[in-house]
Length: 96
Image (cartoon, rainbow, N blue to C red; front, top):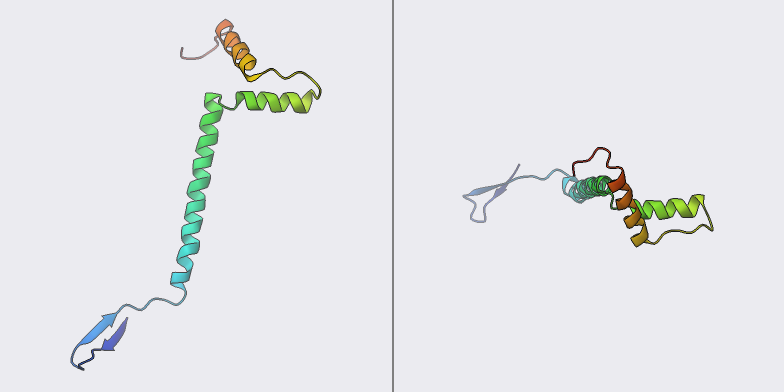
């Protein structure tokens, strides 16, 4: 704390002293927290997309192009029709 004498000389004002460098660390700390929140949100988004199968066609197409170069890659419409037909024929363990 820093005590400053008033302009009239009778009243004193108490002003909290700021530690040297503490204000300069705040932006870096906020950036670190923001990065962790953003990374956490990206991880949750990835997990939900994997569980729901949103990336299934992209994964299939990437696999086909990498493992079977020059092979025919189904269109997205064909892929989803085949996938749903396969799930209907072999329901396995699912809720509906």
